[in-house]
Image (cartoon, rainbow, N blue to C red; front, side, top):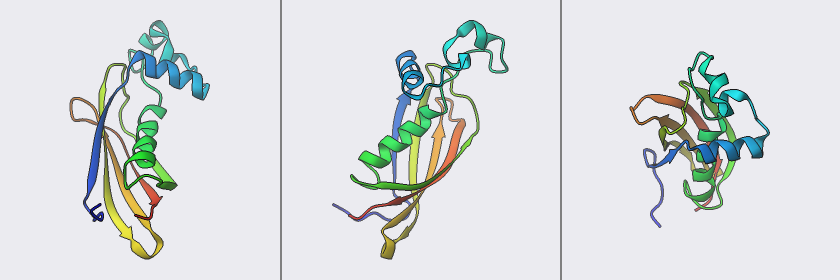
Length: 133
């Protein structure tokens, strides 16, 4: 396996489906009607249903835990900034980029960039991850 370097990245796409939003509501207990009730959501500032904030966060955690920087990664800290809503059926590209490596501590500082199908930023943030190759 090649060693990772600053600038290395991974990108995966996810669609905010009805099933995923429903499952997030079940698992999280967040049954806010903005996520689940089209009539309610139509009368909000968003005009229609939006996915939970956990939609992108779960995707980030899945990538860190399973792929990047590598299997067995441990998330130490996380910071997210929500930029735009994610609507049902939006396709979100979740990109993680290594910004810094602190080799003596096996730490990776990772930038998080989530964009929708229009290329608009929906979530940004950063993670500190511990991983030994």
